[in-house]
Length: 79
Image (cartoon, rainbow, N blue to C red; front, side):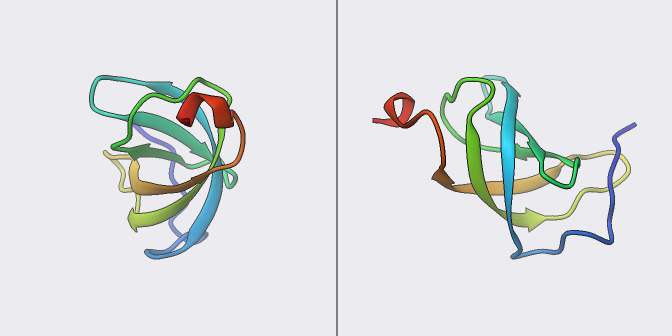
């Protein structure tokens, strides 16, 4: 079961987060409000700070779906 806080973020909100892991499909991100999110994105190392837009809110069974707009740290990993 995933932890989610439905009252804090909404669709199209912009939030900061930290990459906590990844898979072949994308990245797992812990948002600043402690929700977990998933982004279909290439590789970024764990600990990288990113700015995300929320596409789909979290449910009881799924992470929030976000898009990464900007990488705030680890610039050389993106270049």
